[in-house]
Length: 399
Image (cartoon, rainbow, N blue to C red; front, side, top):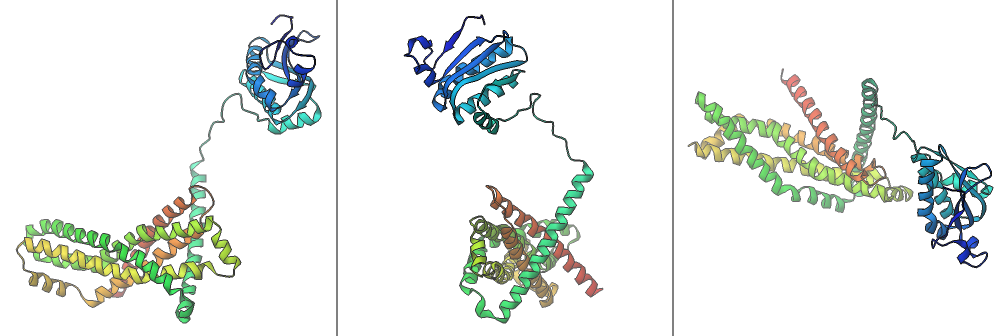
């Protein structure tokens, strides 16, 4: 720009069009040359929020122009600034960022110390070369971090299960301390609400297993043994396993979401402040309800699957009496007791894991969703592990 002085006000007029002193009070932006011949952007008067809003575009345009012509430095003179609030400081900060994006540094001259500190508190230094390159974590470090986290989660979960078990024993010794109304409510939600889906899944499972096994056994003329397969697999293994997995996805996640929401709303802290133990007050009723409900749902799952198997046997020409006699020969009360024992343990694990994940909920928008997901994943994994432990124990007892 030439040495002639150019002045821009908020209305785009020269200062001569205003009464004396009014332009300075309102805030002005000027471009001029200093005694060293450098082109300078100068502010004068009040650099407050109103003036900053009116001068924002002219200031940004001046900085963009100077970064193209003035080299590596933009000079801003603030000797004549009488007042600078947060709005003016934001304008100066934005000019500095615009200078950096244009490949130049901005030099702020003459601003009072108190206003310098305000600008410094708002200044955000941006990297000129772009965002930092993300360095992936080494594989060994990632494995180590994951192992330590898994060990920590396991330790916390085992401690919580032990605490819940002790609280459950205390409730058995003193039944009057249990909130039985809550137990009935949770049993109704987890049990009666799950009857349709458990019945449907059990029926479909019996139909599918019977049909698929009958295709293979027909080659050997052994279709009658479909009854043995359905009876043994459903009573000893698939019945309690499928019922507990469905309860984990349906009710364990609900327990985690309910308690997690209470944790975020600080209701858990309120209970602790009032001297009420969260485990006894919130966890024990849910665990008792789950321990009651899971064996019942297991029986319903088994009966539905056996009905499905009977339908397939009828379509193959076998009468109902033959199917029932075959089931009675293949199964026993001991097998049913084994399945129901699994269901009791699975019910305890499902409720305990769901409540523990709810109590471990952190703050944040997605915290409850994360706790719900963790409860389902952890519950299914623990059910599979404990089921394997049961299988090993039965093998050792019968070997």
